[in-house]
Length: 476
Ligand code: GDL
Image (cartoon, rainbow, N blue to C red):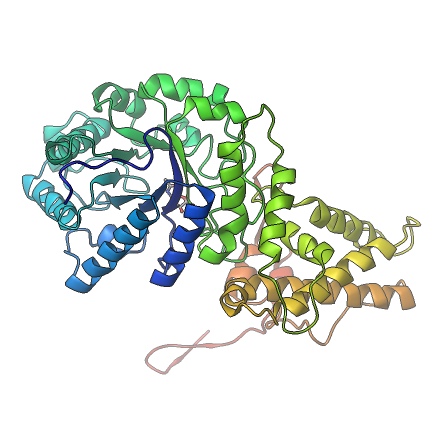
């Protein structure tokens, strides 16, 4: 281990968090990610996969020699590309904050990484049970004091070996909404701000977990409470909460002046590593822009040009226009790209009025839907099979919907009163499954509220079946 080390990044921490729920990236995916990071000038890779069991649920269990070898290679791959490596543990699911045994076990686990030469660490206490056990209550006045105590102890211990080690901390309330609802107890952030060592960086995701906007003004209050600039954990493109989507829209909703009020931006992306080229290219563009204005769409178009080069098909070429329309269908969580929005608007004009009654010409809708369907057909033939694999599910679903809409348009054009049905979109196999059926019970309005579905037949797609009890008797 070098006696003296320099961080690649002396000031802002900008880079990638592997911090999502779901299968962690493979070695090959991580190398691809790091290659991109290097070429984009992103300086920090943060290892925190929620479902590396030994990172979170089974945090007490040591890594095996082969797991450690993987982490050593990963750290080395970071170093050789000029990227800082940060390692996190998330013991909050069952840790006792008053237990010296637990503290020692935590240190032992961090020590495994220290033995590899890792110097920067994090403690993540997001998404954990909210409150102290009886044992811990006897020792700590509140949750925030327990967390500050733990983070400070670890920080001092880590710094005792390397005076410049970084230590990052994720609090239990990590966005405004959680703060307002007093997650972690009333005054959590204020206590944390007071008690936490001022050199520890604190993560913040903005007004929401998935924040469409983060502004300097909104951060002022939190900066005051934390007594430090927050480090942004950005979930803008995370898709672990909805496996039917991914996001390739631009880094946006963050005005340029935000950069002055934060310690950095670590971006927790799409689970599928290969789908993050545009998010990271635009993030890097945002971070490096010198001027006063930031145009996410222009940055997106530039980044999409680069991504387009990877969409070579073994069949017919995908046109740039079709590729852009495809990307616009998977833009940002709360926003469709322009072309996709246009397609949706045109489709609404066709399918939300009695056909022909509004005198609308369906030509533009047909052209866009056909272009999109054809692009989806070609995505199947991508030369880059890992990219095809990453896109497969969402591509399939999009193509099915376009097929259906175009088919129904054809029926309506023959007879505006025609019943709309398709041999390829049948109940059970199309939009089927328990989750879809359950989703139909409560429909969500634009403002977030839910309405009950009071027509019971509307949500039953399968014929009723009799359930067999496990002892073989028939149950109703
Ligand atoms: C979260 C989790 C994160 C997850 C993201 C999106 C933080 C601090 N934690 O709340 O691991 O990927 O939501 O689902 O953001």
